[in-house]
Length: 416
Image (cartoon, rainbow, N blue to C red; front, side, top):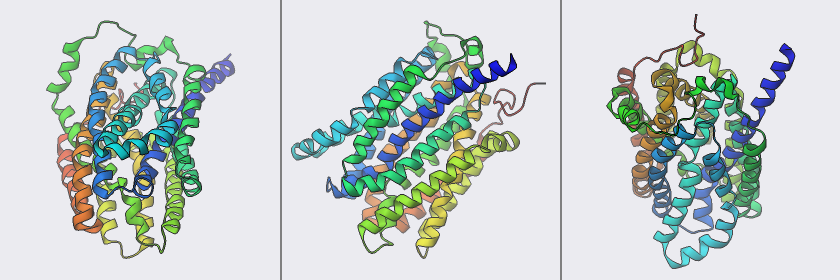
């Protein structure tokens, strides 16, 4: 009987890392190669490319709070995650047949349309996918971090294949996304069963009546604002730093092709490291605490950005870049456990969407265009000094402001 139960739990786990794999394959393609595509195929300047990312982040502000509230209402119903995955199937046709004609008419129009579309499926949709799997982990009794290993593996595969696909045909990267999105849609439909008998562990059963006063209470919490500030000053800066990193990296090589190929290998190695570390990370966070995990993440990120500015050669750039393979498991596992242990579980998706994504996207929206101007006017080194300094200051502030989580509610220790 016990063997049957264990088999059932394993069967109900594997669909979630597949969903993570396919979704973050698409994520890595966009955030790893879209800037390069815009530069080489779209012939955009740093400011124009930054504008697309700014609009992408800015428009996601419409989706983040709405998706959070809807997710807390749907809980385990799949309508929203399916809508996102189906919409992602159209990435290939959009960039193949619509983007360039729109560019010929109006640059702002193409920025608006591209930002709206990508923010829906990626910048806006990521919190929906992540919180759904986190809730499933609570109901099905598996570690979220172990499912998220699928996302790391998907990112590694995307990085490994992306550079080669780009060199063969730049548009091929978007068609690869469409294929991955088809697999994601099928996974949601057929391979992500939830143990509804344990739904209360993930925030209770579905309730058609949305308690707006309960949602409004989030904004009265001091800890919510510190968590939002933390994401504004760390993860948002990480995204801005990452957007045009490939252009900085290529400066160390004699040709664009050599730089693109090396970047593909580097990013693959980074995400493989992320994949490997994702397995022990839940146990590490259980030992040190999720709040401490967040602060350590901020310190490492600041050191990595400032260190990139000081790097005398490509060797040190590569070493510092590989630190991201440790950063991502650290922050991903920490934030999931921290929100679970510090806020009402019924509002998990709303808190995650607002603090970890909505607030973050406000910062990305502002800094993408600002950093684009800094890259053009000041150069990468000086811009990295500024961005790293911001991360360090915010991390120090939040080290004193974030409250300690409840380790039992966070799943860091078992209830005695």
